[in-house]
Image 1: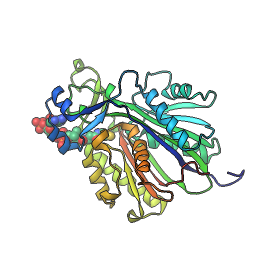
Image 2: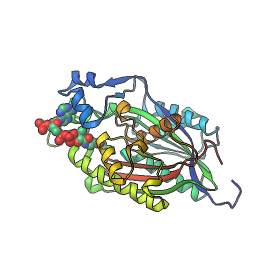
Image 3: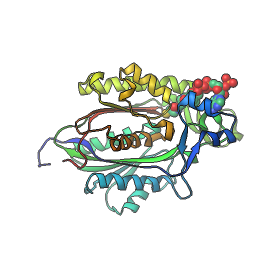
Image 4: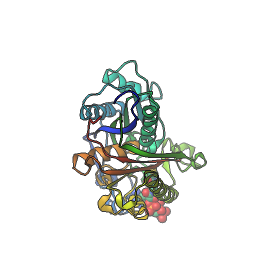
Length: 326
Ligand SMILES: CC(C)(COP(=O)(O)OP(=O)(O)OC[C@H]1O[C@@H](n2cnc3c(N)ncnc32)[C@H](O)[C@@H]1OP(=O)(O)O)[C@@H](O)C(=O)NCCC(=O)NCCS
């Protein structure tokens, strides 16, 4: 980039880390009153990853960050933004713990709490820093140890979530990259998904709680709306989108939102069958997997959409860049 040149933001390197531990539907059958057939039919999930001892959000996020930095050609990083709702601890931030492992002292590092929309929020913040000229390269990490929040006595939620991390190096480019971003929230829907005891049952202990049906309906509506809005912002028709990378909440949510947005499932990235819902990490993991599988080539038009607790939502339209390109 030359001084005074127009600055856009682009993803210049992607990475993911998945813990080796696998939690299959058969193991859940042994924990709660459920069945492989029910989980598969209602969610599309066969198995999810489960972090082992010591595999905290910061450890997984650090691994994903290393891979993304390597893919981007080891650029100098100006800021670290981490999206997580399952941090190692309340303080210090998971961003600072990842910063320590990466050996990048001195630059700003902070967490964003926006649940399943966290990655889009973090990229939105990174893009704003880059376009304002406050940073040239921002490391965005989304990392979740969701199974540590799950109540394995609550069958309506415990079947959904898995662990993992994804990272993106977001850097300044003269053109292309992230063409449009939308993000929003509605705190009046805060009780839809939360961490705590079951409503009306303070003795039930803390866990991830969710009104499944209400969440399902709103998730489909918002993800469809956001996909349409970012497409319109970017000046693209649905037919021009090469790949939709949605938050992996439930296969039926993904199918319904894609259908309403007019994007056929052949052009939708899906890995929920193997990974479940990894909250903020789901989109960057899916991006890294899509790139590794040859489903993302330079110039491709990509839409990402997310919805989560808060409620929060976000989406972006981006043109895929050559890894490490400037
Ligand atoms: C959770 C979810 C899979 C439940 O599917 P659903 O079709 O809506 O099912 P319902 O909640 O209406 O429950 C139907 C029945 O299945 C039961 N059920 C719930 N979980 C079950 C399980 N794991 N195994 C077997 N039965 C289950 C319910 O208890 C209910 O039984 P009842 O009729 O006897 O009361 C679905 O609502 C969902 O995916 N919601 C969105 C979740 C999500 O994506 N959240 C994160 C957003 S970021």
